Length: 88
Image 1 (tube, rainbow, N blue to C red):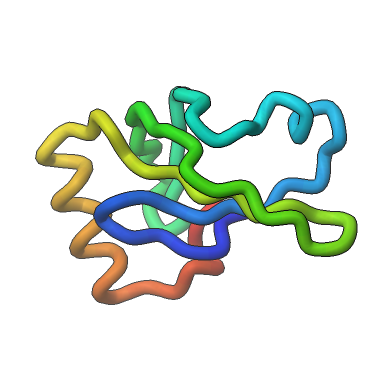
Image 2 (image 1 turned 60 degrees about the vertical axis):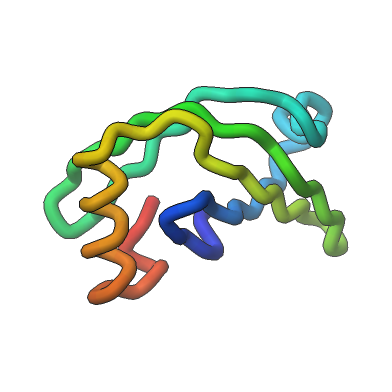
């Protein structure tokens, strides 16, 4: 689940042990962000820049590398007016 979202990236919480073994700093991945308000999906390329273990979960920091100007603007507008709990 998403903990934090900004124009530059996002922090997600992961508990699935299968997924966790692939999440290492420097790993590049495709990211899909679904906003509950209108269910638009923003797709971009990101890079894992931080992995922080907290008990039975891991917080993963992802920096956006490739994102369209339209999606970047959408995130900016959304971040200014929404709660992070609206993001899936």
